[in-house]
Length: 154
Image 1 (cartoon, one colour):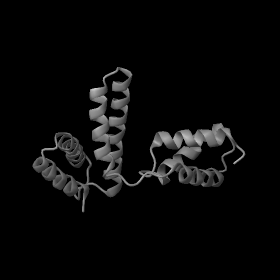
Image 2 (tube, helix red, strand yellow):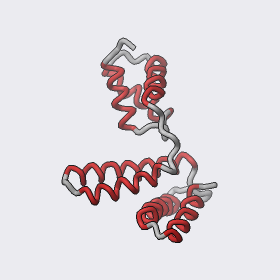
Image 3 (cartoon, rainbow, N blue to C red):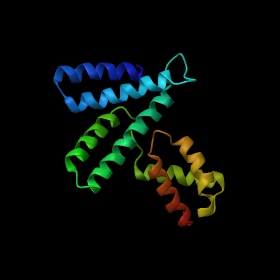
Image 4 (cartoon, helix red, strand yellow):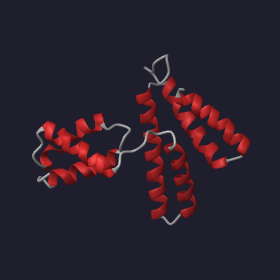
């Protein structure tokens, strides 16, 4: 079932349950889907699964960043709302990789690319971002790659 249909069904359930936070988060996702579908150069067949995951990752990142900003400004009520919406968005994302699995995959990518040190970060990140898209957050990937390249005895 396409993401749009799943979101529509979720909106109906949230309306019936009078769950305002869930309804707000799902409507936000639906709005982003509609914008992406009507954007110039968009496919007439709707969004691909990859595009849907990118859209959800972008929405999740926005919520994380907003929550962090609100926490820095001691606005816990707004941060709580953002975190609640983030939890709802994450329900639609694929399962994230564990730290151990991420490091294992990155070690393989580093060995395949022949990276030797921190100067090869870009080369590794290009491959890692493509292969691990949707399975791990870009920030987590970047931090793990930096740690591995700085500690070259893996």
